Amino acid sequence: MKPTFYVTTPIYYVNDVPHIGHAYTTVAADVLARYKRLMGYDVCFLTGSDEHGQKVEKAAVTAGETPLELADRVVKRFQALWERLGISHTDFIRTTQERHKKGVAHIFRDILEKGDIYLGEYEDWYCTPCETFWTETQLIEGRCPDCNRAVEKLKEESYFFRMSRYQEELLAHIDANPDFIQPKSKRNEIISFVKEGLRDLSVSRTTFSWGIPVPGNEKHIIYVWFDALTNYITALGYPDETGNYGRYWPVDVHLIGKDILRFHAVYWPTFLMAAGLPLPRKVFAHGWWTVEGQKMSKSLQNVVEPNMLIDKYGVDAVRYFLLREVPFGLDGDFSHTALVQRINSDLANDVGNLLSRSTAMAVKYFDGVLPAPATLIEVDSALKHKTEEMVGAVDRLMDELAFSKALQVIWEVISAGNKYIDDTAPWTLAKDPANRERLATVMYCLLESQRVTHCLISAFMPSTADKALGSLGWQEDISKEGLQWGGLKPGTTINKAEALFPRIEG
Ligand code: ME8
Image (tube, rainbow, N blue to C red; front, side, top):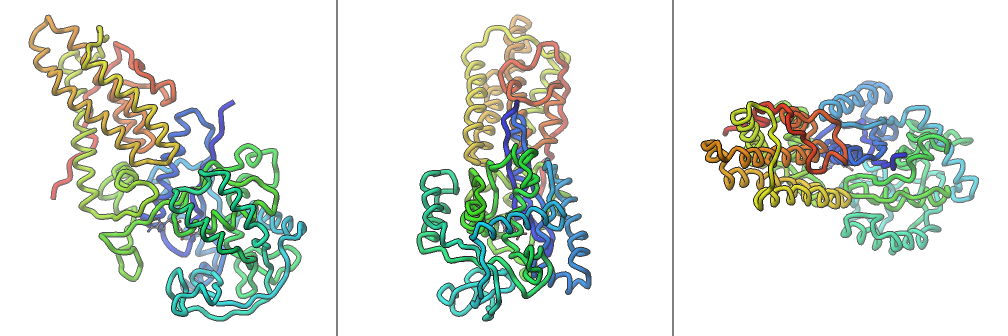
C-alpha cells in the first residue's frame, strides 16, 4: 500500500476575490502534492472556501445578495482560478456544505460534553473586520493591533473554550516536536505568545446569524475560526474513522500565511487536544508578498490579479516565479520587472534554450533517433553524477519546503547541461565520422540529464515538463523509478522542441 500524504491550504474567505497571495499558498501546496505523488505517495490535497461569519454577511448586504448567493458567486472565481493554475487538489470544501456543518456541530458538542466548552459572559474590545476580541492591554493606541481599525466594547453571553487548560500541554508538544511549527522564527513567536498565558476563548457569537448554530442553543453561532479550522477534518468525513479521516489524519502539513499562524498553531491544536484527536504534524507559515514595495490593498488599488498575470506571462512562468523568487517562509516583493527577468533568464535562456539546442542537435546528427551511449568519460560522468545528486538534494529540500532552493539545485543541473555542450562541442565532433561514438555518448548524456530534470520540474511547471518530456520521447508516467539515470532507451524518437518560453522584450 502506498504511504499517504495530506496537505492543506487555508480555506479562503469569499468576501474577497482571489489575488496573488491566495495563489501563492495554493501553488505551493500543489507543487508539494505533485511532488509527493510522483514519489509514490497517496496524496490528499484539500483546499476550499470559508463562507460563514460576519464579514461575509456584511459583504452580502453590500452586494444586495444573500450570503449564500455571494458565496456561490465568489467561490466559482476561486475554483476557476485553481483550474487555470493547474491546481491538482483532490477535494474542495465549502463551509456551507452539510458534511462540514455536521462535523463542526459534532466536535463542538463533543468538547462541550467533555467539559472544555462552557457558557459564560463576555465583555471586551471587539474588532469587527478581524472578528476578534482584544483585551485592553492588547490594543495599540486604543485600536485593533492587527488592522489598526477602531474597536468597540461588546458584552454578550458566550460559550467559552477552556484554552487556558492546555497551555502547558501545548508548550510541551511544541518542545517535543521541533518541526511542528515552521519556520523557526515563527515557532519562537508562538512559544512566547503561549508563555504569556492562554485565556479561555470565546467560541460563539450572538451578534449575527450567518454561521453554524451551537447544537442545543441555536441563538448562538459558532465562532468563525472554530468553524473554519475544523474543515481540515470535516472534509475527511470526521467523525467517521473508517474512510478518509482514518486514512489521512493527522495532516502532514497545513500550509498557511503568517497572518493566520496563531489560529493554526494555538487554537486548532488545543481544540484537537480537547476533543482527544491527534495534532497536525506540521504547520508551515509562509511570508507575505508586497507589491512593488507596498502592502497590497484594495485602497491602494495595487492588488495583483493572478488571471491577469497568467494572460500576460503564462501559467508556468507565474508558478515558477512565485516559488523561485522568495525563500518559502520569508516575505517577498512582487514586481513585473523581477518576473520578466526570471522569465528571460531562468526560463527562456537556461531551461528553454538548453532543450531546443540539444533536441535540435539530436535531430541534426542522429535524425531524431536517440543513440546508445558508449563508455562515459570524465565530463559525462560529472554531468550524470550532478543529475543524480540533484534528485537526492531536491528530496531533502522538498521535505523542508525549501522550494526556492530546490529550484536552484535543479537549475544548477540545467546550467551544467549548457556548459556541457560548450565543453564537449558536439558540432566539432560531428565533423569527423571517427567521433561518432563519442558524439552519441554526448547526446545521450545531454538528453538523459534533461529528462530527469524535467521529471522534477513537472511538480513546479507541469505543462512545460509535459512538452519537454514529449520532445524527449518519454512516454512513461513520471515516477520515483523514472528519476534514475538511464531511463531513456536508445532508439527513442527525439523531436526538436519549440521554444518553451519566448523571451519577453521591453
Ligand atoms: O484568513 N501574501 O482567509 P483569507 C501571501 N478564511 N499570502 C497571502 C497574502 C499576501 N499578501 N494575502 C493573503 C483566511 N495570503 C481564513 C482562513 S483557514 C482555516 C481560514 C494568503 O481569504 C495566505 O495563505 O484572508 C493567508 O493565510 C490567506 O491568503 C488568507 O486568506
